[in-house]
Image: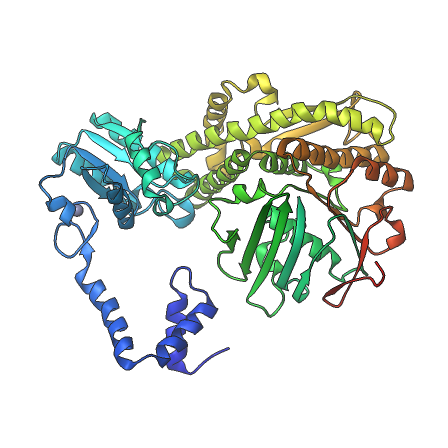
Length: 198
Length: 369
Ligand SMILES: [Zn+2]
């Protein structure tokens, strides 16, 4: 079923968001149609300002509102250990455990030919450069415990070991096939403490 | 374990129904195309999150609807398990178990033991190896949650490697292929180990069942043929991973050329042998039928013993294919528990229980029963 053009346009845009089907998109569009104009404006503006104000950290590719993120700027953090994650939101999860005091590197995904992602599409060259520049001695690979995350971890181990760094992987205990952000803090904290050599 | 109730909306021919089956035998009677098999399929879906007819998810959604909803509750003593699945025409399905997202499909599959006898079960014995591989992998997933996870991961890694080969061919990055080979051999060895463990348990069971289901006593054995490793048994498991990795390495050139993975458990064959005869090529149809039934009965028995709960039993139009003697002996081997039967000719069903009429998207209990 097609609606008036302005409504249909919003429905189409909303339906492109992850986890939103046609029905939910319709419900959201009609909800927005009926709220106060001020509320609708605030929603639209917060989307735009997030996009214009938030950028990726020049160093670790975390989300930030300046050139470097707050973690990279924090001098109390140990630069010799680096935790490699798939996405910026994984940093928040690891931070919550309060078990990690080093810095991060965001790959931007995991190796997945199905999605057209190979090593060249991930920030691996930048990682290698940082390990040399910042004198990193241990890399903790915290990719998701999925087939793709495990494969990426193995690729990283083979890539980084010749550089003379210690490469460890989070200990198991994470739900198999899950996402890092579904793991509870306690489990993830234990996985960090019990990480193993690759 | 018993199904207390099931609700379907937008599923196959059902706009909206709720059925509260009896704890014992339930016989669904209806003409061909009336929806009785679809109902059994939906019950099976709640246990395996898959259509036992091999239909893709989108095919389960009623024409014109955006999504199908299948909900039901299984009860075993004090424990109850509510499984709810929303299957959209497009996009990912959503599964809830007792209101929560399960961590994996494997968690659901091993939670609800269910065995389905299907009209084309003869294919288990007669057709190519994929039916036998699926039988073993499905049973392993029902028995052990980690086996289901290993198989899912193996299939995922295989799809990834095949996609890399198909898209890139000879240009495929060697270091990336190397890590996929490593994962594939690791996961593949686990899949093969489960199959070998199951075959070792199945052989004595099938030998006994073969006679109990009415054939002249003969010993049932199997031969597992690894591709391209040759005959494998449990004693080969240590070191299997390394051998698979070597085999993948040796096949690399051919794989790059053909753009597909030619080595591994997805290509393996399982040969069933009765006495000294290959069941596929040198046995009568009756003998093949008996072994096919035996494989399902064995699955039922193993699930019951391992899970400590009687599996839900689904018999989809099975009796029309069996002579009265085999029907009777089959029923004798399946004591207790909840049973779902579909039939177009109810006089063929040698079971006493609640009879339901299935017609026009409605399921109604017969008066006076
Ligand atoms: Zn940063």
